[in-house]
Length: 119
Image (cartoon, rainbow, N blue to C red; front, top):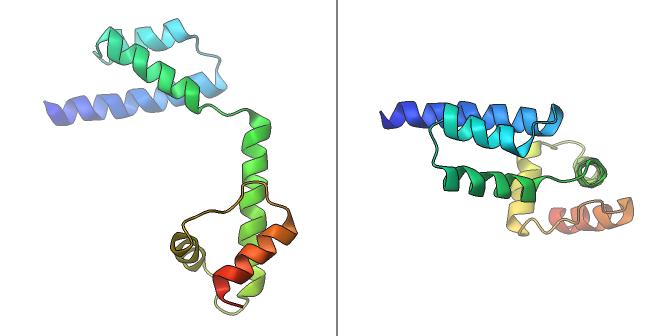
C-alpha cells in the first residue's frame, strides 16, 4: 500500500508541476487534485501548494541563472580543454562548496574556474 501511495504522489507531483507552470492551473484546482485524486489531507495539500509557490521563480530569474551556469561551465571547459567533463566540474564545485554566483559575468566565472583548477 505504501509503495502505491508513493507512486500516486509522484505522478500527482509531476502533473502539478506541469499544470501549475505551463497550463495556468489555479490554486483550487491544485488543491482538488491533491485531496480528491491523490487522497492527501487538506492541510497537507495546502502546505504543499504554499511550498511550491514559494519555489516558483520568474522566467527572467531562471534565464539569468541558466546564463550564469553556462558561463561557469564554458569557462571551466576552456581551462580544461583536454580533460573537461561535467563530472569533473561538479567535483570541483563540490570541493569549493558550490558558491558560484548565478548570473556571474564571464570575468567572474573565469576567476572562479581558474581557482577551481588551481591555476
